Length: 225
Picture 1 (tube, rainbow, N blue to C red):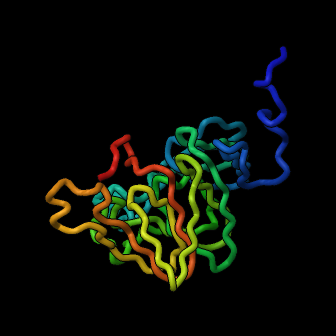
Picture 2 (cartoon, rainbow, N blue to C red):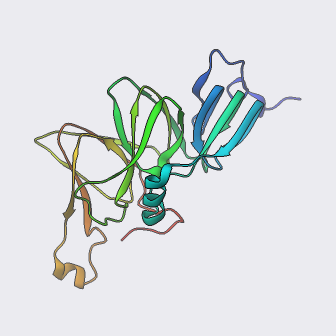
């Protein structure tokens, strides 16, 4: 049987070592030898002796996620084998954390991560009840994190001389040590006249970076504004 479907780049090869790697731009392969965590419902295939169980997030994180809709429903993957994760054919990226690294990430953009990484839902300081939510997920420690993004991400440097303003429905994540605040870019009178659709943004100050996706569509397909 012959077809481009069976091209070498589409065929799974033997794993070199346990852990996470890109299978292709739309999926992540995880060779499990122990346990890892993944977004509930993101497993598209597996082989070997693996068990998938809903992961509790603790009372505090559970309440934050219930109230805000932010956060992340997780599952624990245990055993020995291989699993493949994806989410709605979004682009996938693997982020390597070194000791001391941390990243604030929108829960909708988390796909899977090593059990060695710390995970916590925290308040986005100064943001108020912005459209993107009051809470985001903060990852720290050493290990790998699988991230998904609808479309090609835009990574914008942030400097003390030049803060960056991002739409709360488009932001993927940012350097955890950046200061956040809510910025209003139109007057009250303009809002009464129908507005520009860009009433408020998240302002980031300091030294670092912010990641945005090329879409302001909220989960469920509803456009912002």
